[in-house]
Image 1 (cartoon, helix red, strand yellow):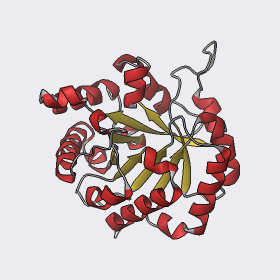
Image 2 (image 1 turned 180 degrees about the vertical axis):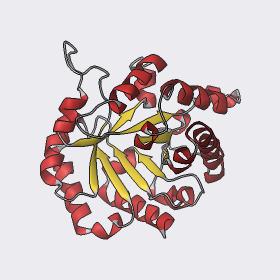
Image 3 (image 1 turned 90 degrees about the vertical axis):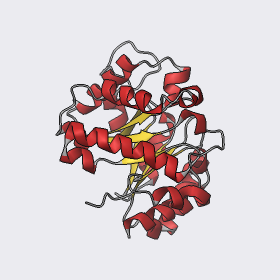
Image 4 (image 1 turned 30 degrees about the horizontal axis):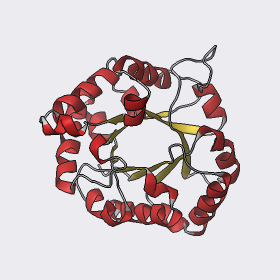
Length: 258
């Protein structure tokens, strides 16, 4: 079964209303690049209403960069799924390496967020679970052990049916924002390992789950990465802030669906 390519833009703590306007105009004027692929934009939470107002076509989805595991309450600065879906969100990033590294998110909290998203019954939400190893872990040949442990912990108790709401993003931490990119062959090795793990756990559903690559993915390396068997698209950081660059990445993803 051919998995339709998926391209997700993660603006991180960047962007503006001006960029929202510029990006939506570019996507609308070049909507041919959206044919046969799915596109998700994850701006900072304060820009979600601007995106919801600007994007009137169904095939550009909105995503949140993080969620709270709590439904409501005294959690200053956090955003519940109820609030985020009201702003138009239907994808959520969970376990991004920057959340793990800089904000102390451990496996227990990441698992709680996954469970909160999968049990949310007001609106179906797709979880984008981020996994990946640091430079030192790679040097110590721990890549597969680290990735397996992250998958096992976050997806503990997840059913085969629930797995249909999950996307995996492999983001080698050593490549994020550094300009270094895993070679297509190296990235495929890890993606292939993830595919085997998912298929063993979720059977047919696991074979159909999207696995994205994230780690300094740009227009000039996107097509080679997307040509690999188990790289179904990308989680794009810095390159997603440039509309022309992002459109070029979306165009590269189209070649996978042909």
